[in-house]
Amino acid sequence: MPSTTDATAPRVAIVGATGAVGTTLLRLFAERDYRYRSLALVASSRSAGRRLEVEGAEHTVHDLSAFDFSAVDIAFFSAGTTVSEKWVPVATRAGALVIDNTNAFRMDPATPLVVPQVNAAELARRPRSGIIANPNCSTIPLVRLLRPVHERWGLTRAVVSTYQAASGRGLAGMEELRETTRLSLADPGEVVAGERFQPALAFNVVPFIDRLLETGFTLEEQKMTQESRKILGLPHLDVTATCVRVPVLNCHSEAVWVECAEPVDRAELVSLLAAQPEVKVHDLERPGRFPTPRTAAEADLVHVGRVRVTPQNPRAFWLWLVSDNLRIGAALNAIQIAEHLRQVDWTPREEATP
Ligand code: A2P
Image 1 (cartoon, rainbow, N blue to C red):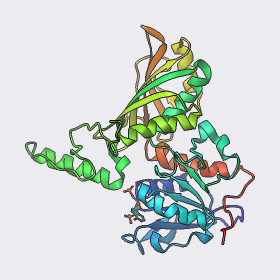
Image 2: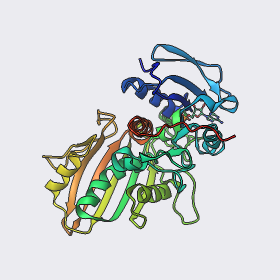
Image 3: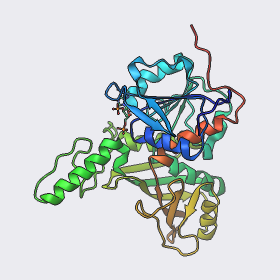
Image 4: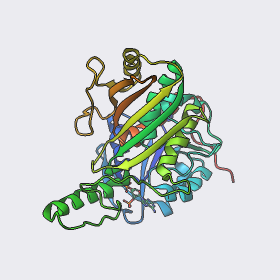
């Protein structure tokens, strides 16, 4: 039972509690026995008053616009960037520490961008902004693999193509993929329009996620470059991506090409990756084996396969990775940050300034 009277356990709020990441976070609270003193479920006015059962206890969903953060130690935000831009400052002004899953504050110098397996040291002191940012869903598994490679061989370049699932656009995105797939099967000649995905995702791949920037890159692609640099502490790292939405319900995949300063030995590389926490290498002994979104069973592991050093350039290698974007790419990373906060010597809550 995660609810506890232990005075050191935090009072928690989840903003976006009815959404894809919020509901995953609630599941992880139970699975990981994350202890809280109180739990507030917060969403839009559309859901206000709904009753949700969490670990045998009934909770009423609060309307964010009327919610008071003054009795909250840690607020998890997963309701979209515009919601975070407006309401995270309200939560921090009320003294809560925010773990924000959106793009709103990731590049703010006063806000650490944290993947606990990579840069937990960023959590040594309370962030000046009162916010800890959770990185983009494709960046998290990538940097977890790049970090040890950099330490061993020195990274010079990384080129990534992503294959991103519909759940990255929330529960409505998953439903839209199911619905447009049903419609396309019923009438293959019909051009099915999408709302969350344009053009429609059913039987399609779409090399466009988030919005287009002046550079010709999408914001999603820029996030992967900027966030990888910030998390790895390599501000000039040449890392670039093409981000593609694919008709998969959940789990992002990435084809990653990495170039290092020194020649890479495949056997050493696979052992190094396999030794990382919560990473499973599928072609450890037999080259060529690979995970897929449908077959990678353990959802809390980063799955790696197809590890191959390029014969024409032994300083470079390819790998394929699969990772659950709702868990590893969002809710699991957030709860691992919160779990880490139990070990620090500062309290998440700061008394609100009058
Ligand atoms: P609601 O269910 O009331 O719309 P997803 O990522 O699956 O689309 O979920 C988004 C989450 O963010 C949901 O919990 C949703 O609540 C919440 N949300 C969306 N817009 C707002 C808003 N303006 N204020 C508060 N919560 C919001």
